[in-house]
Image 1 (spheres, helix red, strand yellow):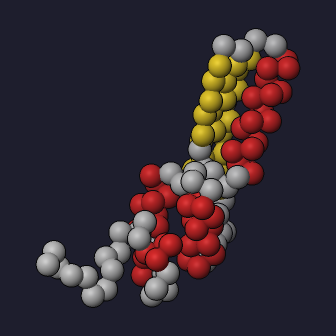
Image 2 (cartoon, one colour; image 1 turned 60 degrees about the vertical axis):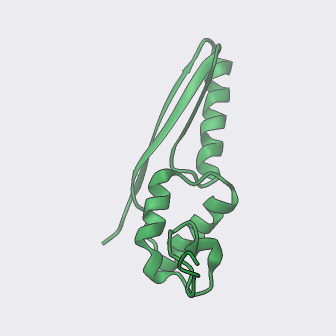
Length: 111
């Protein structure tokens, strides 16, 4: 089964230049790998939303989420997704295990 990712972009602006600038900023959100974003000022605004999934393996998706973490633009939904994919994270990969909420092995149990 092929998955499909759909983006919805809403843009407002006082002038055509404002709309073009907002569209460029919305495109940057998607280029950075983010699934949603918004911004506004006195001259215009944009809102980006998405639904659906890309056709990826769990390992490919984990690498994408790693990039989101490094870029500091991971969403709450993506953190939940990371938790759901925890079983696919390699032991010792603290960069993904920690935000996935997986406890460290051999913890001190509060002692």
